[in-house]
Length: 170
Image (cartoon, rainbow, N blue to C red; front, side):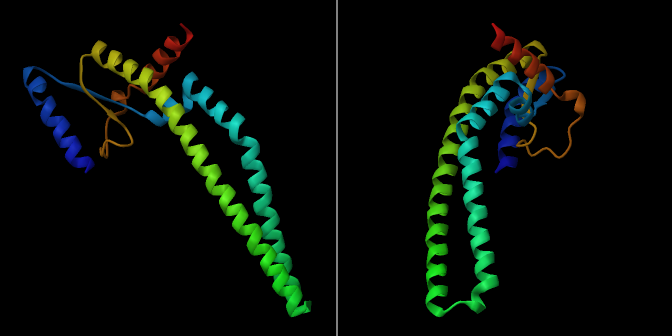
């Protein structure tokens, strides 16, 4: 599917390429999210909203594992009633944990999608401005383009981050 999209994009760029030398570039969006001020602010927001919940879930998971290890170690010494009671308790706690973890993942994914959307609009505008200023015929996303090799000199990522940060300060 990616290859078809790349072929379609290149076929659309063909008329521009025929008119003269065509320049292409790429942007590593993951770096933009990791290194730009907007991306770092989004990461801080995620940590602020979800850090405590994630820590509590990790503690609950560890407690369940500890209970499982204790049961495995001590089950030979337990009566069948005690064994059944402990297994039921562990199973109940595990189901509650899985439900909370699923809700957490859903909330986290929704917040990440929202923040990504907030970052994408200005980023797309900056990418378009950089591409126009450099007279680019095409700009690809490095990780999703299907390209197996592209010269590092075509990387627009540092300039996009720089301009995005400058735009955010205005």
